[in-house]
Image (cartoon, rainbow, N blue to C red; front, side, top):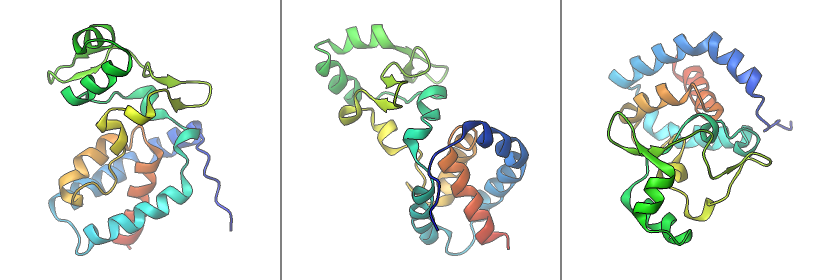
Length: 169
């Protein structure tokens, strides 16, 4: 059976409003008391998720969120634009309430809205390259990130949905 990988953001938002509280409850519960074997299942489920979700049909993360830029990110990207790190920071970044360097505006200045592709993909921030961090760490160590990301990322939503079906049967 062929799976439609294209993301319909309107449908995603509808599903999110219907399931958000149950998903958050599941994430809170499993963060405090992870079910046996969840860390081993997470990478397997992540592979299933990517068979069903096409990021380029969505790019909601780039439209609604901002990465945190590390000093290494700033050096690498500013060099690409023939700028000093300070010039790059002044032009594109601002400190958020956590004192992290983030984009001044949304959608991301490097997102091509015509095709949802990143214009600096090869040198993008580390935060972007790992997003949505589905199996980055142990489930209990990253459930708090999933709680935030389900609001923006259909892949995270799908991951939590699949984990719930496995662990709340």
